[in-house]
Length: 170
View 1: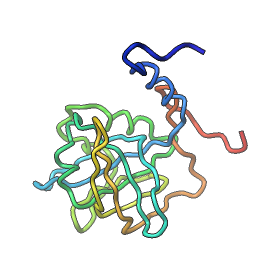
View 2 (view 1 turned 30 degrees about the vertical axis):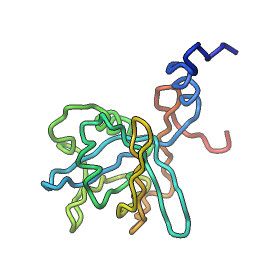
View 3 (view 1 turned 90 degrees about the vertical axis):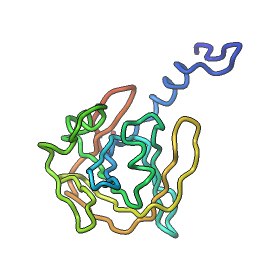
């Protein structure tokens, strides 16, 4: 194994490489800004936190273009992507797109929250808490509603900087 320590500690490259070896699912978190503008970003830092009460979390980069709308919102939705939605994930990961929802199949719920179509699952949350996490903020949501998509769908997987597919029983 290569040495990942320098005189200053753990190198950024070694840390990214180690974390990149952990396969994650991919989701798009959506929200409505204070002005009603639809917001969305790709995350692989989503996880469940608690069963009682039902809580989830995701981590938001403080330099993300949609940082302010997400830390000011009181609701968000986690849209869990299928392995057929890599292009949508890439689209929502790109900065500087004025309307990320243009041409993307979605609907808006009664409260103005944008919800993507064709996802494996959708978890709608009220914001429970924010926590500082270095160059990120940890957003904790209390689950308000769950919408399950196709039962036979397969998840989009992210590993070593690229998308992959899940193979059952592998």
